[in-house]
Length: 182
Image (cartoon, rainbow, N blue to C red; front, side, top):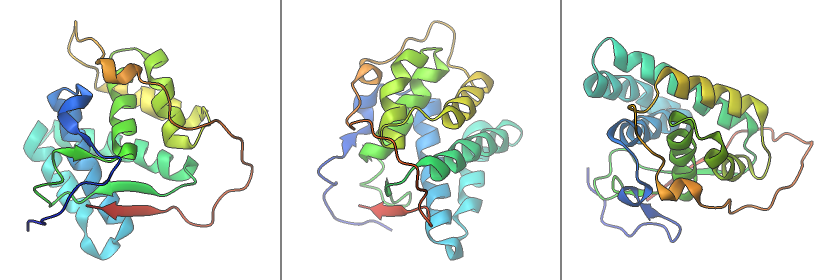
């Protein structure tokens, strides 16, 4: 199904993030998982696992998807604001990333290259200004299991400063919010 619409004002071209093919694939799989959480009746988790198996093979694909799911679950636990994501089935959305998707991709991109220093801004963007140790631990474990190719360097976009101002909140929200955008 194709939707004719314009990207959100904060959307960035996926190509501008400097991601490798693996990371671009993660974005597609992540969108299916987020759809499954936002609309459980969609059963989109099946599309996430099927897409991962198609992209990375029957043996490795589900392992990648399962590891990615752990990172997504951790973000859902620590994030207080809505996580805007694009429709995984929309042709025009595939080439754009929301600000939250871009932060996620840049965090993974930097960590897969053993550049946790470059991941800090993205972690702050994802958590609303908190260097959450659980998210860092889970994302680093994922990155260690699926590292970038030897000699791969971090994209300049990964060094961008965080957009949020750090703040500490003690209260936890009652629900984890996901918002599909086009």
